Length: 156
Image (cartoon, rainbow, N blue to C red; front, side, top):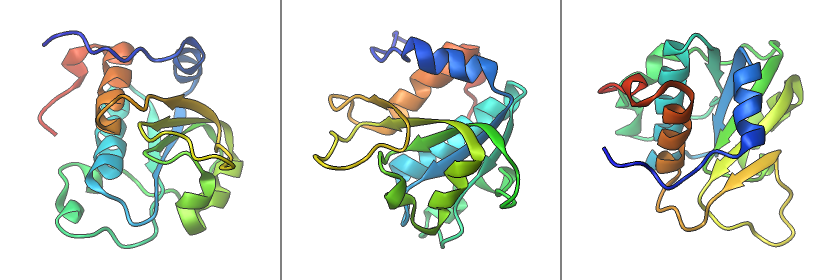
């Protein structure tokens, strides 16, 4: 596999290495990019020894509800505090809908997105936004390989 052109910013690398508990989130009405990023990252982080939970109280559209590994990621219990939240494919906490208050229980928030920022939109945290990336999943793959190497990625 060739090296990916997306470098995880140094502050984000530090945050991830300093964290043990991670909350994963994507926007309401999730699409394949957001939910795939959340699921892939959650599975990889679990393999690397992180404790992960996911947000997402709303329905997941078909066929994304059959995404391999999604059911193995525990849902947030609504009370746990986290070292870090990873927010995939959306920059604004408002796009998390009713899940947005959960970010208040996180010491830090890292936004991973490929959509250009919208003027006047507040970011949920530290942005790793690469508008030239075709999908958030490619940024997520870069994150995973930075933390654990390509061997961290399996079929799921």
